[in-house]
Amino acid sequence: MTVFTTVTTKSAVAPTAVARAAAPAGPRLTLGAAARELELRRGEFELAVQLGHIRTVPDPGGGQRRVTAREVARLRAAADFPESLRERVRTVGTGEGAGLLGIAPGRFTKLARTGRLTPVRCYLNRYRAVVWLYLADELVELALSEPELLSGRHPEPDGGQDWRARNWRGRRIAMLARQTDDQWEQAAAVASALDSAHLAEIVRDPYERACLRRLQPETFRIHPESAIAQAMVDRVLLADEPDEIEWYRLRLVEALADARDQCPAPRPIGDPAGERGIPEATEPVTKRSALVGVEPLAPRPLGRTGPRTAAPSARPAGPERTRRKPTPQEGGAPVQRSLLRRLRRGK
Image (cartoon, rainbow, N blue to C red; front, side):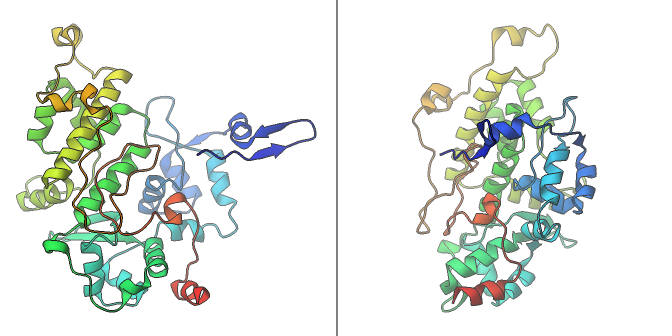
């Protein structure tokens, strides 16, 4: 439901959204310039954009997205700038996160493996092991909403299932979809969760596959000759269970239909395939008409709630295991910096 507030003058009352749209946005800053104005490091700025804390706009010249001077002024006008903005994108690893919650690292890892915590980032360390990062704000919310998880019997993964990679994939693709209005870029984000075999089966046109590969978002920077590192990256990036794979297959077919409606994929001038039309997928279930009213396969029930869906502005990116409701921080609400202070206040 959309809520409108109003701006009142002596002679008129207009919706706030209309008033803002009428106001000049000012010059459009590059992402690097906006990060300097907001006193954020590159990683902090990128995460703030992905989480929706910083709004970006398309570049009229078709280049990298930009940030308006009005958006920068809005963020800088906060009373506790820049500390509040930095705190909203603060990430912690297992050790620091366990210390923040006052629990042992082993218990923290089990909470993450069972899906109580969803990673927001990850990287490969020097030993080619995956390191998961979590939003400090969300750890605070977990401590306040489910304090029983921090003591008592350790939560045990169901059947040894580790939900960190799966939850991260869903979250990552949802964040990528929110950053662009280009339907081909959104389709490329979904396609990044499927291996080449599934991609070739669904996207039979070679020019469309080339377009998706070109627009595929970068996640890890690894040495091209490191087969071991590439295998680790694939294990994190690619869906690996039947219900999750089917979820992304269905999402990709929908995203492709929207992208084709927006514009065809680039192809050589005079290519006869462009005149014959786009070949359909091999499976009848993946036709767009068959998707009307069809819900994607749900993940196995392992919690009190079902899969968390993406924000209404983006298509659902994947079945994500969670035991908590979306936090105020995911909607952009600020939080107190001290966990201990908040816990004492709640008593």
